Image (tube, rainbow, N blue to C red; front, side):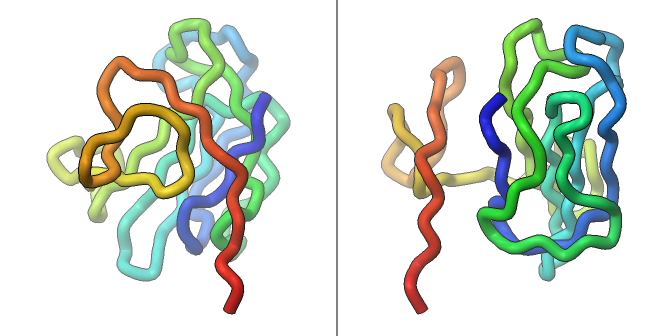
Length: 130
């Protein structure tokens, strides 16, 4: 699968790395959860079994590899990344934060938001020169 990288710096607070692809049992998705400096949480799910490249308490930088895209859990049988950001309560959808992207190809709206029902391909991440 495609490499999944951190969207922002943070600390790994949870990982799951042992579920098989095509195990469609709810909750059986390989994932990484990061806590950012502002206390928000990023959830990266449906990763390939054995691909998670970080451990709890690791500090990660923007663009650092977290794992590889897979189809563990209720993925619908299509490899993809399920990515969500929450203010502080993981899985509380009332606490979810809208996400905008700078490095994606596909149709986005005027404020950089992805559109429901559309497919997107992440472009290579390039760090800004300091």
